[in-house]
Length: 118
Image (cartoon, rainbow, N blue to C red; front, side):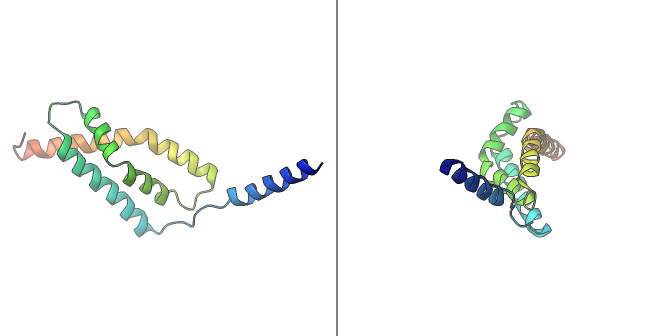
């Protein structure tokens, strides 16, 4: 009985703390976090892209180089969500991250091509 009572207290304590989310970030904070991530990816793409490798390979490398900025941008843009919403948001963004980064690689290549650069 004593263990059951302690478990109940522990679960209730967790429920109370697990339902709280970080306060929502301001739009300026969200924009700054996303801009920091995109700038990091742009810089990584410039350093990694040889113009010959597959865009997805370059995107994976750039994403790895910018993992800290990506994680921060997800935390900031997902702030204010309840834990269940945040998990779904984070999973969706992880699925979309490679496609977004491939797009950055392709735009950088198109820009270099327009400027006559390799």
